[in-house]
Amino acid sequence: MNRNAPQPGRIRRLGLITSQAFSLHNFRGPLIREWVARGIHVLALAPDYDDASRQGVAALGAEPVEFRLERASIRPLRDTLDLIALTRLLRSLDLDATLTYFIKPVVYGTLAARLAGIGHRFAMVEGAGYVFSEAKGGASPSQRLLRQAVTLMYRAALRGADAVFFLNADDVELFRGRRMVASGQVVQLGGIGVELDRFAMAPPVLAPVTFILAARLLAHKGVYDFVEAARRMRSQHPEVRFLLLGSPDVNPASVSERQLRDWMAEGVVEWQAHVPDVRPWLARASVYVLPSWYREGVPRGIQEAMAMGRPIVTTDMPGCRDTVEHGVNGLLVPPHDPDALVAALSRFIATPQLIADMGRASRARAEALFDVRRVNALVLRSMGLETDIEQ
Image (tube, rainbow, N blue to C red; front, side, top):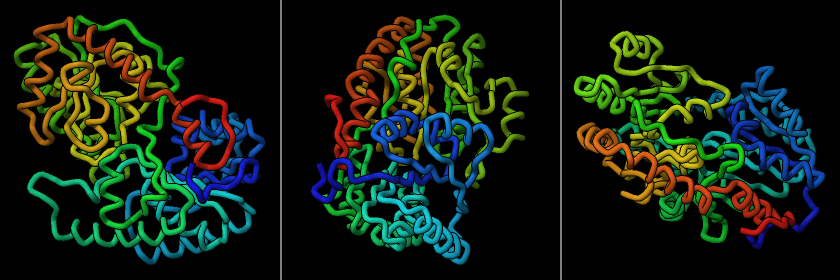
């Protein structure tokens, strides 16, 4: 347990701060329920609530609170005004602790909590993100400048945090090496975890072989490499299906809806916009694919697919590589390499039995590493909250 953590029972009111409301009930539901069960009043702060997300948060026993924050851009004047407004809001909520996740909430939310005088501050780094990722050909001068700015912002925000949760060892090394965190603040979770009962093992899909990419449809998630692989493989194996699941994003790196519809018209992929429940789509897929060159945390989509018994093909990148034992529950490929991706996917067409064998190994690995109960137990202990769940 972090030595700065509050004593058991001291947290009465907790602010959970994010930039995406849908993630609160979709990704944080089990943790919110754990807090509520301990008598903690959870105030869930997000800038983009709609009726469904408000209802989802309220159903968990938490209180939805809206605030202003731009998710996908850095504009110093606007962000400063938003920081001031958030500081005032947090002060008015009379919180004992905050937990922030996603990049801008970690920076601005943790800074605001510090300025508001909130005694206990926790942050979760779910991947180092685009800023610290390497595009093909290396980082541009503007990206290097942004990297320096973000480093300074992380240092300022995370100074004095009780604990900073990380999902993979590569990010721990990065943040320590750039002096964005101190060793005593670090808690490594190994993934945010999934509800293994909810994401139950599904029968393998051996015919037709069906590959699925379900993620935010951003260039750095490897969407274009996935489509290129589909284009090449369907010319030789027209029966093979490629499912692309997700919606265009406000991020400037997002694939446009027009591009998605062009791919559909070309017949290379079958596209479905974001769905509230991914399980039926994973159940009809053979293999989960994420050719990301983004510095992920430990991708939640991969964890869900593993829990449902799907082999994984992903890149040898931070976060992604943590999910796969190469040749056992899936295959690792280099980033930015459609040729290697085609070769990896072709193995499942040539030997469909790999779908069943590697799928069973994925489920076993998910049970060993990604049980949300164990992950949440570590979070609770690091916050000074009692738990009877064994790690």
